[in-house]
Image 1: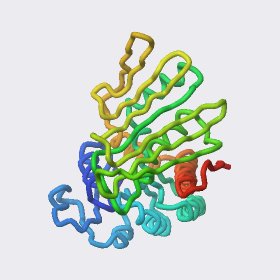
Image 2: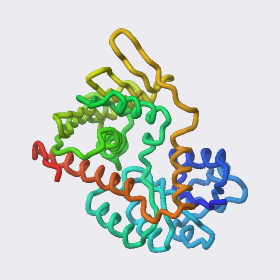
Image 3: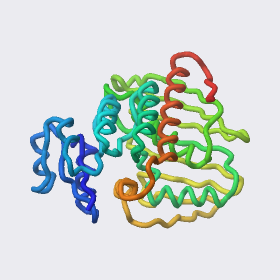
Length: 310
């Protein structure tokens, strides 16, 4: 049995709690939460802490999930490493590049397995989508849109709230990092603090990625279309049939299993805890690369134009 702790029992933390209940071989033994209703979400044997440092001192803890606001990720993750505890941290890896570089180096120094919550990479529909894209040969371009209706989170900018997933998926699909990035931000006149961001990522062989992020969309959206020479391949996370191919007049629905992305990601974390792999290099490199790109996009938005990625 793998003993897991959870730091943060907000909206996403509650999803972790309910998902872990349905998984075999894992026991949620402790939760850090200041919400008095958390006791109603967990099993009776789960200890609730009001101090996350005390939670990380439990001797029988095998790993911890960090589901707190991004500006707390760095401090909690560094303390977990100090205590020798592997962690799964929600996206983004940290809230800025400097902290991400420090955390990246400390993970290598500690030689512990870690995972970042780019949860769409664990979606069965996304995996079917990716496999179809790869089977069709070279990618010409990608267009994506993500966001929600009037979801204004003052502590997390739209770019850092919605951008990590799309950037991670594009790197995963194309299999390399962009050479150049740019972004433009526009304010929304309907909602206070609402904005839209137009992102451009430029890859080898003139592959161009366009991503629209907004917290003022008519509905929650996570949509990605890959243009290949043979067909269009679509991933629509909010649709019933989440992955499909458009080829002329035809439409092919892509099959996938019924497991959940979050459940699959937790299972991956459990396998890291039980396995012989010390550092999860692929995920760690992806996590830092996503932050580096977000940082450059921030510079571009600030008026520095197109930014070279080196």
